[in-house]
Image 1 (cartoon, one colour):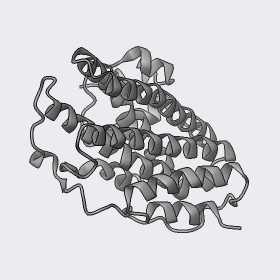
Image 2 (image 1 turned 30 degrees about the horizontal axis):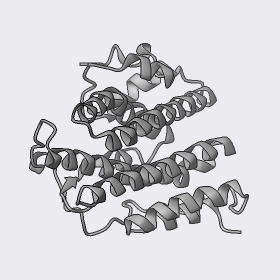
Image 3 (image 1 turned 180 degrees about the horizontal axis):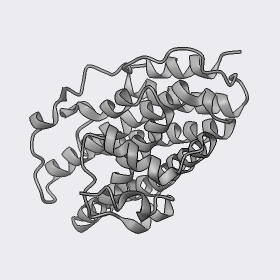
Image 4 (image 1 turned 90 degrees about the vertical axis):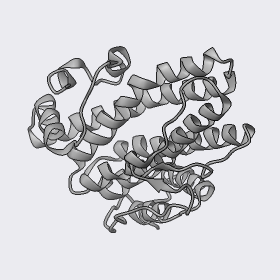
Length: 263
């Protein structure tokens, strides 16, 4: 029987976006069917395989997105979101393949479900881009999205603290305003996609918060104090308001976590 680690590594090393999407969903199905051993004893790649396009640029090199509701501006936003979802597939798969052996099976259940969600989100966004005359890879994208994974490759607790509980939680803060911008110009197709992603991301952040708390309990740590310490030492950016407190609360990420470290 193939191990969970072997299957995760194979998905990470799949560069073609549609093939990676299919690989992530197949990985989740194989796990649900009991076709994979719960073993994560194979080394994950330092960097997943990605396609030649989009061109990846440093944040300072990224072209400024135009504000307003022009089709060109909406395409740029959807492309940026599609790239986030594409990298999020690898983030979820790497979390399972790298650290899944340290957790019970329910952890793998949750995070392979997240990987399948991210694959579905990417497919929806790429389909919408094509309906608007574009596609994923047509524009440059942010090169720094994998940095948090690389910086936390040594510790599951740090990975959970930074990726779902900081980076994905930030999506909860900004997505409602993005949804309203698309709705204001009558782009209901994009609005429905972004609203679906928003609801799913609450569940993803909740998975991060729950399993962060579980590992803190296993290690005898205070979850809130440990999260704050990790964010201060491992996260390069700033936690800046405004925060979507209600969505964060729904995800289990209450104000006691982030209020004292916000800048």
